[in-house]
Image (spheres, each protein chain N blue to C red):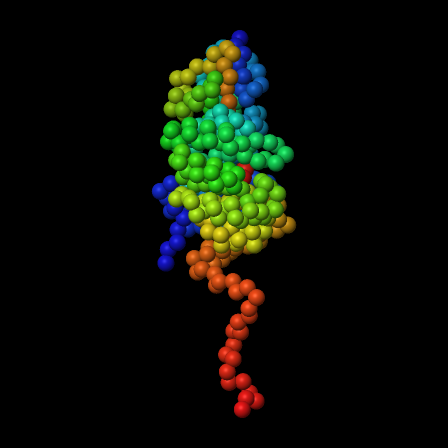
Length: 67
Length: 262
């Protein structure tokens, strides 16, 4: 069991997974998102190779209306 | 006769830039933006709502990035670090998009910019290759420093964000306009069409607004009013106003040929 943080909230997963797998698990497939892991951007091209580890802090963002 | 706005090497026909917040729904957002004629639209970057219905529409579907130039902002950021991280996320989100609006706030009551943090963030972002349009106070010295750092547009407030108080210090705006070699846009404070026209008559290169349109009783009509006001103000600026004649009138009709003359 691993625990990491997505947008400040703790999440538990049975086993380590890649960002690409996480996107599927969170039902964010096809959405235009950007991900930061422990303060650094993870480019979309690297989602499939990037593992999420215990204690990681992820920020997952979208564009919303604003001025 | 072309009179286009040049920002970071790209030209735009519209000098009105608009925000996409505070509308009733996305279709009203789209209708208002169409009525405004704006080509550059600001967006905010926020945490995704995990677990929300994936079929829910997104802003990007109503305002396709292929039709508009997105201007991701750092609204709500209170430190240089937060603002820089937000815009790095925006660049990734929008496929290496470089044009951004930097704003670092100092206070949640006034939403007044924190210029120290703004300067710090601008240095980092310019060094990383961003084209930075920067929201700042109407202090000409700070505006000059931001230009020296390499910001591609200086965007002083006319009055507080969302206040609709209009152009409170035209003198400072003039000082900034006269000294700047990059475009100067009024960002924040416009309340109604005449405010936008005044900003343009002062010589601003453009106006950025959100609440003045979104919070109008009829946002779509106000969007059109703002488009016309920005165009009218720009034309008046280019045409050059007549000199003011203090304490003396000057008739518009001939003073000769009056009936009853001898």
